[in-house]
Image 1: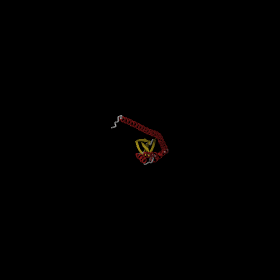
Image 2: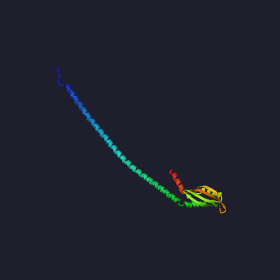
Image 3: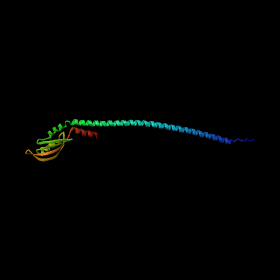
Image 4: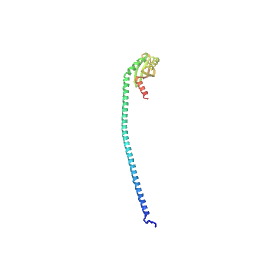
Length: 193
């Protein structure tokens, strides 16, 4: 005789598959929660490391900015000291300049020329005087151009005048002053360029 199973085995198999499916689903849910939690923890750890790096960089940047400010102030003080030193050197070198200029004027002025007024403004001399002839003025201009302390000379005007029954010519002249201080300043400017 044949064995007939009347028990509801299909329903039991269905229930077993349902329980297995629910178990696998729960296991997948638990594993995915663990993976998400681990990923979030790893991302949070990376964020913290980046915040620490940013904080370090910010502190270093502020330190460098303070050093830059200090360097700028030192540079400004250095420029100020250099400017003062240049002024002192110019004064030191030009303290004997009037003596040199007057000495040089004595050397370049030929006989027959008489100065009535000499004025100095910056690096220029303004001379007024009397001359017995135009040749004397021309000779003086040549001597001025070859002078160590005097530079270009430009006659401003020459006019005839009479003085003590002698025919004298009045003249005004502009003479540039060449000094060691001016030469040094020119050399410094050329070096800085």
